Image (cartoon, rainbow, N blue to C red):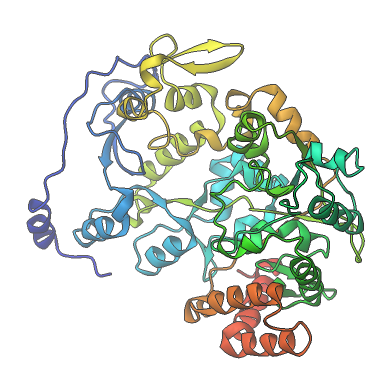
Length: 513
């Protein structure tokens, strides 16, 4: 995308009138101790869930705290890219720039619109974030690297380092003779067959199944604990015995996992309706299947699935990885990175502005005062403390009212991404449950690459999903049919992608890029 002349930009900008105003937010109490003679640095800010008017509580608080003047950029998520591209065409680049995943990092860096943010620079300016990444998934630093250069600050996903455990209907387990969840693949198979055949709900009907999957949406993630018993994940890059990366879908471990799934499907243990399931039917909480999987926070007592299960009288037992033919089983995790925060190329050329942005972002990630102000506001005005946790006052439970005060994600993109502040988001009992379900679990993280070859073959995932389902249903056999798929996958771009992935990974590991 070419950047336009100032005259053209002015004409284009005159065609768009941004809603602006000044809300009657309470005067913030933050004091940055700066001299009043020091001119505030203007920072344009792009995020989501924006306050409709300027001058919200959080905006005023930040401006006083950091001696800045914030220009809010308002873009609706429903047509984000179209609206953003109009602004970019008129040289309106956000200084603080929310990037939706690697595709955005790649696209805007290649257009010369993003400032380079070297990994060492991010670590120096945001040491608390760096410590969390280094401790939990150090390879995640390379996820946002494009052609050897880093352009994004990872918006760390705290849930991304929590394994996707299997969860069981506890009453069903007891009904089929188990006092605890299965620990091996062999025990698991025994359990799910009994869930299907032994009437675990005691209604005298054969209307229960062992497990299901999201055939309509994300089938791989819904069955990841089965593949984890074979130490692989079909949609992840995993290491082979020589340390090279291979795509999980084409490994022998996946072939073996598919054999188990195909057997369970033919025997009626895997719910046949998995083909059209999208996760909205609630098969687990509605007592159709006895095993489900997702992030722990959904299954905790106050989670979406936990609350629905309790309402339907379903008691939940948390399982762990299943040991299989290769030894200790593993569970997949989403990984630390997903979205990123970037800076415009213009902000990158202004050392004072760049330093100020780092200061603000680091404060939100590591400073309790900044966390509380951006997420909850002012105590007594926006929230009260109850049992050590901030509870929004009645009027700020309403999402629109909350956003109008600037609370939440628009300014505080990193505020709820710091482990230090988890105790304000989850009760101690929930965190204790998380520790229980994650302790001792070996995790599989996907190693992400934003490489040229991936962009060349956008249809490859369709080939993978088609065969994924057909391997399970038996429409394609797992002998010659699987071999043929592997060859087709390689010819359709998989081999080129694999070569580039390994070359990039080798360069990253050696520190050449």
